[in-house]
Image (cartoon, rainbow, N blue to C red; front, side, top):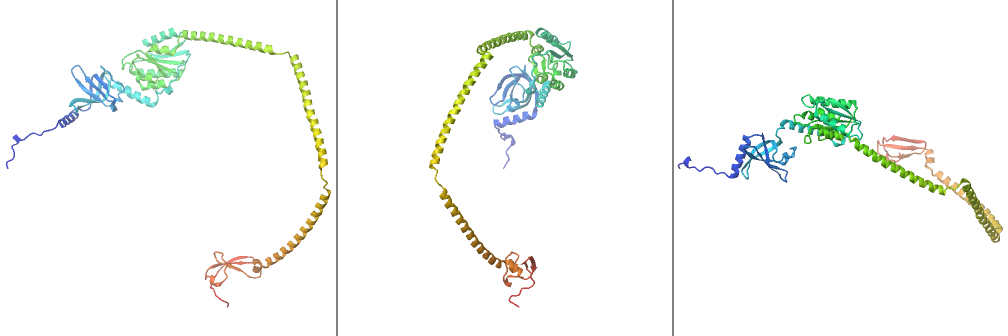
Length: 450
Protein backbone atom coordinates (compact mmCIF):
# COMPACT_ATOMS: atom_id res chain seq x y z
CA UNK A 1 0.00 0.00 0.00
CA UNK A 2 1.33 3.42 -1.00
CA UNK A 3 1.85 5.77 2.01
CA UNK A 4 -0.13 9.03 1.91
CA UNK A 5 1.51 12.07 0.48
CA UNK A 6 2.48 14.46 3.33
CA UNK A 7 1.31 17.38 1.26
CA UNK A 8 -2.25 16.09 1.46
CA UNK A 9 -2.21 15.36 5.30
CA UNK A 10 -4.71 17.32 7.44
CA UNK A 11 -3.12 19.64 10.08
CA UNK A 12 -3.73 18.90 13.79
CA UNK A 13 -6.78 20.64 15.30
CA UNK A 14 -6.56 22.13 18.83
CA UNK A 15 -9.22 23.69 21.04
CA UNK A 16 -9.40 27.33 22.02
CA UNK A 17 -8.63 26.37 25.66
CA UNK A 18 -5.49 24.57 24.58
CA UNK A 19 -4.49 27.53 22.44
CA UNK A 20 -4.94 29.99 25.34
CA UNK A 21 -3.06 27.72 27.72
CA UNK A 22 -0.15 27.44 25.29
CA UNK A 23 -0.07 31.20 24.75
CA UNK A 24 -0.23 31.80 28.51
CA UNK A 25 2.72 29.48 29.15
CA UNK A 26 4.65 31.16 26.38
CA UNK A 27 4.04 34.61 27.88
CA UNK A 28 5.01 33.50 31.39
CA UNK A 29 8.26 31.94 30.11
CA UNK A 30 9.10 34.91 27.92
CA UNK A 31 8.42 37.69 30.48
CA UNK A 32 9.66 37.03 34.04
CA UNK A 33 8.60 39.20 37.00
CA UNK A 34 9.10 42.80 35.89
CA UNK A 35 8.58 46.25 37.43
CA UNK A 36 6.06 48.23 35.33
CA UNK A 37 5.18 51.91 35.85
CA UNK A 38 1.80 53.40 35.01
CA UNK A 39 -1.34 55.17 36.17
CA UNK A 40 -4.25 53.45 37.99
CA UNK A 41 -7.56 53.43 36.14
CA UNK A 42 -10.89 51.58 36.61
CA UNK A 43 -9.83 50.36 40.06
CA UNK A 44 -12.25 47.80 41.61
CA UNK A 45 -11.96 46.02 44.93
CA UNK A 46 -14.04 42.83 44.78
CA UNK A 47 -15.83 41.29 47.75
CA UNK A 48 -13.31 38.45 47.62
CA UNK A 49 -10.52 40.93 48.37
CA UNK A 50 -8.96 40.80 44.88
CA UNK A 51 -8.02 44.07 43.12
CA UNK A 52 -8.86 44.63 39.45
CA UNK A 53 -7.61 47.72 37.62
CA UNK A 54 -6.11 49.03 34.39
CA UNK A 55 -2.52 50.21 34.28
CA UNK A 56 -2.00 52.82 31.58
CA UNK A 57 0.32 55.50 30.27
CA UNK A 58 -0.01 58.07 27.50
CA UNK A 59 0.13 55.50 24.73
CA UNK A 60 -1.22 52.16 25.99
CA UNK A 61 -2.96 50.25 28.73
CA UNK A 62 -3.05 46.75 30.17
CA UNK A 63 -5.46 44.97 32.47
CA UNK A 64 -4.11 43.96 35.90
CA UNK A 65 -5.23 41.79 38.78
CA UNK A 66 -3.78 41.63 42.29
CA UNK A 67 -5.08 38.74 44.35
CA UNK A 68 -6.06 39.14 47.99
CA UNK A 69 -3.05 37.26 49.34
CA UNK A 70 -0.76 39.91 47.76
CA UNK A 71 -3.07 42.92 48.15
CA UNK A 72 -3.20 42.65 51.95
CA UNK A 73 0.54 43.45 52.10
CA UNK A 74 0.39 46.46 49.75
CA UNK A 75 0.43 49.02 52.59
CA UNK A 76 -2.05 51.32 50.82
CA UNK A 77 -5.15 51.16 48.60
CA UNK A 78 -4.55 52.87 45.23
CA UNK A 79 -7.03 55.37 43.85
CA UNK A 80 -7.96 56.56 40.37
CA UNK A 81 -5.09 58.49 38.80
CA UNK A 82 -2.40 57.27 41.25
CA UNK A 83 1.04 56.86 39.72
CA UNK A 84 2.34 53.46 40.78
CA UNK A 85 4.99 50.89 40.03
CA UNK A 86 3.96 47.22 40.04
CA UNK A 87 6.00 44.04 40.04
CA UNK A 88 3.98 41.73 37.80
CA UNK A 89 3.99 38.55 35.74
CA UNK A 90 2.66 38.74 32.15
CA UNK A 91 -0.01 36.09 31.55
CA UNK A 92 -3.24 35.31 29.72
CA UNK A 93 -6.69 34.89 31.27
CA UNK A 94 -7.80 31.74 29.46
CA UNK A 95 -11.64 31.89 29.79
CA UNK A 96 -11.77 35.26 27.98
CA UNK A 97 -8.51 35.15 26.08
CA UNK A 98 -7.49 38.48 27.60
CA UNK A 99 -3.87 39.39 27.98
CA UNK A 100 -3.21 40.75 31.52
CA UNK A 101 -0.61 41.06 34.25
CA UNK A 102 -0.71 39.39 37.68
CA UNK A 103 0.60 41.93 40.20
CA UNK A 104 2.81 40.58 42.98
CA UNK A 105 3.77 43.91 44.61
CA UNK A 106 2.81 47.57 44.27
CA UNK A 107 4.40 50.84 45.37
CA UNK A 108 3.86 54.51 44.71
CA UNK A 109 5.73 55.78 41.69
CA UNK A 110 8.74 57.96 42.37
CA UNK A 111 9.25 56.53 45.85
CA UNK A 112 10.73 53.24 44.83
CA UNK A 113 13.47 51.95 47.09
CA UNK A 114 13.00 54.71 49.68
CA UNK A 115 9.37 53.79 50.25
CA UNK A 116 10.25 50.11 50.49
CA UNK A 117 12.97 50.92 53.02
CA UNK A 118 10.46 53.04 54.95
CA UNK A 119 7.96 50.17 55.10
CA UNK A 120 10.61 47.62 56.11
CA UNK A 121 11.86 49.84 58.95
CA UNK A 122 8.33 50.55 60.07
CA UNK A 123 7.52 46.84 60.24
CA UNK A 124 10.78 46.13 62.09
CA UNK A 125 10.21 48.83 64.73
CA UNK A 126 6.56 47.86 65.09
CA UNK A 127 7.64 44.29 65.86
CA UNK A 128 10.16 45.69 68.37
CA UNK A 129 7.34 47.49 70.20
CA UNK A 130 8.53 51.08 69.61
CA UNK A 131 5.11 52.14 68.31
CA UNK A 132 2.97 50.51 71.02
CA UNK A 133 0.31 52.78 72.43
CA UNK A 134 1.03 51.46 75.93
CA UNK A 135 4.42 53.20 76.00
CA UNK A 136 3.04 56.57 74.86
CA UNK A 137 3.32 59.17 77.63
CA UNK A 138 0.83 61.99 78.27
CA UNK A 139 2.00 65.57 77.83
CA UNK A 140 2.56 67.62 81.00
CA UNK A 141 -0.36 69.84 81.94
CA UNK A 142 1.74 72.88 82.90
CA UNK A 143 5.07 72.76 81.04
CA UNK A 144 7.57 75.37 82.23
CA UNK A 145 10.25 74.67 79.62
CA UNK A 146 9.84 73.43 76.04
CA UNK A 147 12.79 71.97 74.14
CA UNK A 148 13.06 72.21 70.34
CA UNK A 149 15.21 69.95 68.16
CA UNK A 150 15.58 71.57 64.73
CA UNK A 151 17.88 73.73 62.62
CA UNK A 152 18.42 77.33 63.79
CA UNK A 153 17.86 78.48 60.18
CA UNK A 154 14.67 76.44 59.67
CA UNK A 155 11.39 78.23 59.04
CA UNK A 156 9.81 75.65 61.34
CA UNK A 157 11.74 77.15 64.29
CA UNK A 158 10.29 80.60 63.60
CA UNK A 159 6.79 79.12 63.35
CA UNK A 160 7.19 77.30 66.70
CA UNK A 161 8.66 80.32 68.49
CA UNK A 162 5.90 82.57 67.12
CA UNK A 163 3.19 80.19 68.25
CA UNK A 164 4.73 79.79 71.72
CA UNK A 165 5.23 83.56 72.11
CA UNK A 166 1.61 84.15 71.16
CA UNK A 167 0.05 81.36 73.24
CA UNK A 168 2.36 80.97 76.24
CA UNK A 169 4.97 83.75 76.56
CA UNK A 170 5.79 82.56 80.09
CA UNK A 171 7.19 79.24 78.79
CA UNK A 172 10.99 79.01 78.58
CA UNK A 173 12.39 77.67 75.29
CA UNK A 174 15.61 75.66 74.90
CA UNK A 175 16.96 75.03 71.37
CA UNK A 176 19.01 71.91 70.56
CA UNK A 177 20.43 72.83 67.13
CA UNK A 178 20.94 70.17 64.48
CA UNK A 179 20.84 69.59 60.75
CA UNK A 180 17.42 68.48 59.47
CA UNK A 181 18.44 67.40 55.96
CA UNK A 182 21.35 65.52 54.46
CA UNK A 183 23.41 62.42 55.16
CA UNK A 184 24.70 63.62 58.55
CA UNK A 185 21.35 64.91 59.76
CA UNK A 186 20.02 61.66 61.28
CA UNK A 187 23.02 61.21 63.58
CA UNK A 188 22.89 64.87 64.66
CA UNK A 189 19.15 64.69 65.34
CA UNK A 190 19.62 61.56 67.48
CA UNK A 191 22.50 63.24 69.37
CA UNK A 192 20.39 66.36 70.00
CA UNK A 193 17.52 64.26 71.38
CA UNK A 194 19.94 62.29 73.59
CA UNK A 195 21.44 65.58 74.85
CA UNK A 196 18.01 66.93 75.75
CA UNK A 197 17.16 63.67 77.54
CA UNK A 198 20.47 63.70 79.45
CA UNK A 199 20.17 67.33 80.57
CA UNK A 200 16.49 66.92 81.54
CA UNK A 201 16.02 70.70 81.54
CA UNK A 202 12.71 70.78 79.65
CA UNK A 203 9.29 69.26 80.35
CA UNK A 204 8.40 68.40 76.74
CA UNK A 205 10.50 68.09 73.58
CA UNK A 206 9.46 69.13 70.05
CA UNK A 207 11.24 67.51 67.07
CA UNK A 208 10.30 69.47 63.94
CA UNK A 209 11.11 70.73 60.47
CA UNK A 210 9.11 72.07 57.51
CA UNK A 211 7.68 70.12 54.59
CA UNK A 212 9.60 68.56 51.73
CA UNK A 213 9.97 65.49 49.59
CA UNK A 214 10.52 62.05 51.04
CA UNK A 215 14.21 62.46 50.29
CA UNK A 216 14.30 65.74 52.22
CA UNK A 217 12.54 64.19 55.21
CA UNK A 218 14.46 60.91 55.10
CA UNK A 219 16.69 61.74 58.07
CA UNK A 220 13.55 61.42 60.25
CA UNK A 221 13.05 57.88 58.91
CA UNK A 222 16.30 56.55 60.37
CA UNK A 223 16.35 53.87 63.07
CA UNK A 224 18.73 55.89 65.29
CA UNK A 225 16.26 58.79 65.45
CA UNK A 226 13.37 56.44 66.31
CA UNK A 227 15.28 54.85 69.20
CA UNK A 228 16.45 58.25 70.45
CA UNK A 229 12.82 59.43 70.60
CA UNK A 230 11.64 56.22 72.27
CA UNK A 231 14.40 56.39 74.92
CA UNK A 232 13.93 60.11 75.67
CA UNK A 233 13.09 60.85 79.32
CA UNK A 234 10.46 63.50 78.57
CA UNK A 235 7.46 63.26 76.22
CA UNK A 236 8.27 63.98 72.57
CA UNK A 237 6.04 65.73 70.01
CA UNK A 238 6.88 65.14 66.35
CA UNK A 239 6.03 67.99 63.98
CA UNK A 240 7.80 66.99 60.76
CA UNK A 241 6.57 68.16 57.35
CA UNK A 242 3.01 68.95 56.37
CA UNK A 243 -0.23 67.21 57.35
CA UNK A 244 0.11 64.54 54.65
CA UNK A 245 3.72 63.71 55.52
CA UNK A 246 4.40 60.72 57.77
CA UNK A 247 7.81 59.68 59.06
CA UNK A 248 9.13 57.03 61.43
CA UNK A 249 9.66 59.79 63.98
CA UNK A 250 5.89 60.43 63.97
CA UNK A 251 5.18 56.83 64.96
CA UNK A 252 7.90 56.71 67.63
CA UNK A 253 6.90 60.03 69.24
CA UNK A 254 4.42 60.24 72.09
CA UNK A 255 2.27 62.57 69.98
CA UNK A 256 2.27 63.54 66.29
CA UNK A 257 1.44 67.06 65.14
CA UNK A 258 0.41 67.84 61.58
CA UNK A 259 2.82 70.82 61.36
CA UNK A 260 5.50 72.46 63.51
CA UNK A 261 2.99 75.18 64.46
CA UNK A 262 0.52 72.51 65.56
CA UNK A 263 3.29 70.92 67.65
CA UNK A 264 3.81 74.24 69.48
CA UNK A 265 0.07 74.52 70.08
CA UNK A 266 -0.04 71.00 71.52
CA UNK A 267 3.00 71.60 73.73
CA UNK A 268 1.65 74.63 75.58
CA UNK A 269 -1.92 75.65 76.32
CA UNK A 270 -2.59 79.38 75.80
CA UNK A 271 -1.94 81.48 78.88
CA UNK A 272 -5.27 83.22 78.39
CA UNK A 273 -7.08 79.88 78.66
CA UNK A 274 -5.26 79.04 81.88
CA UNK A 275 -5.94 82.49 83.35
CA UNK A 276 -9.61 82.24 82.43
CA UNK A 277 -9.74 78.76 83.96
CA UNK A 278 -8.03 80.02 87.12
CA UNK A 279 -10.46 82.95 87.39
CA UNK A 280 -13.40 80.58 87.00
CA UNK A 281 -11.90 78.23 89.61
CA UNK A 282 -11.34 81.17 91.99
CA UNK A 283 -14.97 82.27 91.57
CA UNK A 284 -16.20 78.72 92.22
CA UNK A 285 -13.91 78.49 95.26
CA UNK A 286 -15.22 81.77 96.72
CA UNK A 287 -18.79 80.64 96.23
CA UNK A 288 -18.09 77.27 97.82
CA UNK A 289 -16.36 78.90 100.81
CA UNK A 290 -19.23 81.38 101.27
CA UNK A 291 -21.77 78.56 101.09
CA UNK A 292 -19.78 76.50 103.60
CA UNK A 293 -19.49 79.45 106.01
CA UNK A 294 -23.24 80.19 105.75
CA UNK A 295 -24.11 76.57 106.49
CA UNK A 296 -21.68 76.52 109.43
CA UNK A 297 -23.25 79.74 110.81
CA UNK A 298 -26.74 78.27 110.64
CA UNK A 299 -25.57 75.10 112.34
CA UNK A 300 -23.91 77.14 115.09
CA UNK A 301 -27.09 79.13 115.70
CA UNK A 302 -29.15 75.94 115.88
CA UNK A 303 -26.85 74.36 118.47
CA UNK A 304 -26.60 77.61 120.44
CA UNK A 305 -30.36 77.66 120.86
CA UNK A 306 -30.32 74.13 122.20
CA UNK A 307 -27.34 74.69 124.51
CA UNK A 308 -28.10 75.09 128.29
CA UNK A 309 -25.87 76.68 130.90
CA UNK A 310 -23.64 74.21 132.80
CA UNK A 311 -25.32 74.99 136.20
CA UNK A 312 -28.82 74.36 134.87
CA UNK A 313 -27.62 71.24 133.10
CA UNK A 314 -26.07 69.87 136.32
CA UNK A 315 -29.20 70.68 138.36
CA UNK A 316 -31.38 68.92 135.83
CA UNK A 317 -29.12 65.88 135.82
CA UNK A 318 -29.08 65.79 139.65
CA UNK A 319 -32.90 65.75 139.82
CA UNK A 320 -33.04 63.00 137.22
CA UNK A 321 -30.46 60.98 139.21
CA UNK A 322 -32.45 61.36 142.47
CA UNK A 323 -35.64 60.23 140.76
CA UNK A 324 -33.91 57.23 139.23
CA UNK A 325 -32.34 56.29 142.61
CA UNK A 326 -35.72 56.38 144.39
CA UNK A 327 -37.37 54.36 141.65
CA UNK A 328 -34.59 51.78 141.78
CA UNK A 329 -34.89 51.46 145.57
CA UNK A 330 -38.62 50.82 145.40
CA UNK A 331 -38.18 48.50 142.49
CA UNK A 332 -35.71 46.30 144.42
CA UNK A 333 -37.40 46.30 147.86
CA UNK A 334 -40.90 45.30 146.75
CA UNK A 335 -39.86 42.12 144.89
CA UNK A 336 -37.50 41.18 147.75
CA UNK A 337 -40.28 41.45 150.37
CA UNK A 338 -42.68 39.48 148.22
CA UNK A 339 -40.07 36.77 147.63
CA UNK A 340 -39.27 36.49 151.33
CA UNK A 341 -42.99 36.11 152.21
CA UNK A 342 -43.47 33.42 149.57
CA UNK A 343 -40.39 31.58 150.87
CA UNK A 344 -41.78 31.54 154.41
CA UNK A 345 -45.06 30.08 153.18
CA UNK A 346 -43.31 27.34 151.22
CA UNK A 347 -41.07 26.48 154.23
CA UNK A 348 -44.15 26.08 156.44
CA UNK A 349 -45.89 23.84 153.97
CA UNK A 350 -42.70 21.76 153.56
CA UNK A 351 -42.36 21.29 157.33
CA UNK A 352 -46.01 20.20 157.62
CA UNK A 353 -45.69 17.60 154.86
CA UNK A 354 -42.21 16.25 155.73
CA UNK A 355 -42.57 12.43 156.59
CA UNK A 356 -40.99 10.63 159.66
CA UNK A 357 -38.13 8.58 158.25
CA UNK A 358 -36.52 7.27 161.46
CA UNK A 359 -38.14 3.78 161.29
CA UNK A 360 -37.29 3.48 157.64
CA UNK A 361 -33.71 4.45 158.30
CA UNK A 362 -33.40 1.79 161.08
CA UNK A 363 -34.79 -0.90 158.78
CA UNK A 364 -32.45 0.22 155.99
CA UNK A 365 -29.46 -0.08 158.34
CA UNK A 366 -30.46 -3.64 159.34
CA UNK A 367 -30.84 -4.63 155.68
CA UNK A 368 -27.44 -3.19 154.88
CA UNK A 369 -25.84 -5.23 157.69
CA UNK A 370 -27.47 -8.48 156.51
CA UNK A 371 -26.47 -7.75 152.93
CA UNK A 372 -22.85 -7.24 153.94
CA UNK A 373 -22.78 -10.58 155.84
CA UNK A 374 -24.29 -12.43 152.86
CA UNK A 375 -21.79 -10.87 150.48
CA UNK A 376 -18.84 -11.89 152.68
CA UNK A 377 -20.17 -15.48 152.87
CA UNK A 378 -20.65 -15.71 149.13
CA UNK A 379 -17.17 -14.34 148.50
CA UNK A 380 -15.60 -16.95 150.83
CA UNK A 381 -17.40 -19.82 149.03
CA UNK A 382 -16.43 -18.50 145.62
CA UNK A 383 -12.81 -18.01 146.70
CA UNK A 384 -12.57 -21.65 147.89
CA UNK A 385 -14.02 -22.91 144.56
CA UNK A 386 -11.59 -20.72 142.65
CA UNK A 387 -8.61 -22.10 144.59
CA UNK A 388 -9.74 -25.67 143.84
CA UNK A 389 -10.04 -24.94 140.13
CA UNK A 390 -6.63 -23.23 140.15
CA UNK A 391 -5.07 -26.33 141.70
CA UNK A 392 -6.64 -28.55 139.03
CA UNK A 393 -5.48 -26.16 136.28
CA UNK A 394 -1.97 -26.16 137.68
CA UNK A 395 -1.91 -29.96 137.52
CA UNK A 396 -2.83 -29.79 133.81
CA UNK A 397 -0.30 -27.04 132.96
CA UNK A 398 2.03 -28.25 130.12
CA UNK A 399 4.88 -26.33 131.70
CA UNK A 400 4.76 -28.59 134.74
CA UNK A 401 5.01 -31.60 132.40
CA UNK A 402 8.00 -30.04 130.64
CA UNK A 403 9.68 -29.44 134.00
CA UNK A 404 9.42 -33.17 134.70
CA UNK A 405 11.63 -33.86 131.67
CA UNK A 406 9.22 -34.06 128.79
CA UNK A 407 9.40 -32.07 125.57
CA UNK A 408 7.02 -30.84 122.80
CA UNK A 409 8.16 -31.54 119.23
CA UNK A 410 6.84 -29.46 116.29
CA UNK A 411 7.68 -29.43 112.59
CA UNK A 412 8.77 -26.41 110.48
CA UNK A 413 5.14 -25.25 110.24
CA UNK A 414 4.61 -25.34 114.00
CA UNK A 415 2.38 -28.49 114.01
CA UNK A 416 2.81 -30.76 117.09
CA UNK A 417 4.16 -34.23 116.19
CA UNK A 418 2.69 -37.23 117.97
CA UNK A 419 3.92 -40.17 115.85
CA UNK A 420 7.27 -41.09 114.28
CA UNK A 421 5.42 -41.56 110.99
CA UNK A 422 4.97 -37.80 110.83
CA UNK A 423 8.73 -37.22 110.85
CA UNK A 424 10.84 -37.23 107.71
CA UNK A 425 14.58 -38.05 107.85
CA UNK A 426 16.92 -35.01 107.65
CA UNK A 427 14.09 -32.64 108.48
CA UNK A 428 14.46 -29.84 111.03
CA UNK A 429 12.30 -30.10 114.14
CA UNK A 430 11.73 -27.65 116.93
CA UNK A 431 11.92 -29.10 120.46
CA UNK A 432 10.32 -27.02 123.22
CA UNK A 433 11.79 -27.71 126.70
CA UNK A 434 10.92 -26.40 130.11
CA UNK A 435 13.43 -23.53 129.94
CA UNK A 436 13.55 -22.80 126.21
CA UNK A 437 13.57 -24.48 122.81
CA UNK A 438 16.01 -25.97 120.32
CA UNK A 439 16.01 -26.85 116.60
CA UNK A 440 17.34 -30.35 115.82
CA UNK A 441 17.92 -32.23 112.58
CA UNK A 442 16.53 -35.80 112.31
CA UNK A 443 19.00 -38.46 111.32
CA UNK A 444 16.83 -41.62 111.19
CA UNK A 445 13.25 -42.40 112.16
CA UNK A 446 12.22 -45.64 113.93
CA UNK A 447 8.61 -46.68 114.23
CA UNK A 448 7.72 -48.69 117.31
CA UNK A 449 9.53 -49.26 120.57
CA UNK A 450 13.03 -50.73 120.66
